[in-house]
Length: 202
Ligand code: MN
Image (cartoon, rainbow, N blue to C red):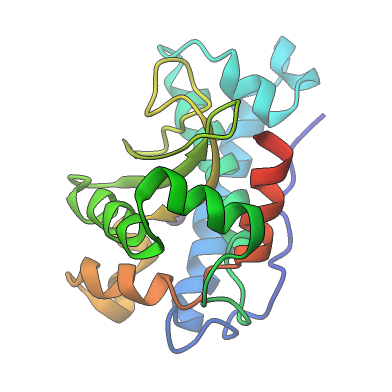
């Protein structure tokens, strides 16, 4: 089986003004496509060809740089497009909202913790909201294309929200102003999708 670049669930310009069309076009069409192509090349003829991307990441040999970087890049961006929406922003509801209050104190406290993790990740990487089995929520950050599904990476939970803080995710519009991009990200979070992932993995 080979992995395919998923179609974006909205137009390139749909997240403007928060994320610009040119960034989306290059990020999805070039960067994510690149990870997809290289992942397929890296697993060709190996047992990983018959595994899901989650199975590949969970069972990863961390010394396998090609699968680590490109498998992570493939999975991380698949999640990223899904947790964004032109109709996003606002606040989570129901069980997820209650879990956030329980584990972070308030939505604002969660936002601060997540934003700090994203802002202080040195160099390229991601910040995550993860759910542990049992339902506990946790924020962590990982370098490069690492992902908490990988062995001994981050908080070890299942990521249900992630922000890409590689410069390719924001540099055209925000240059070095990563904090402004993080603030804007909150205006396009698809909380319905995050809640679905919370329910599925809690
Ligand atoms: Mn990216």
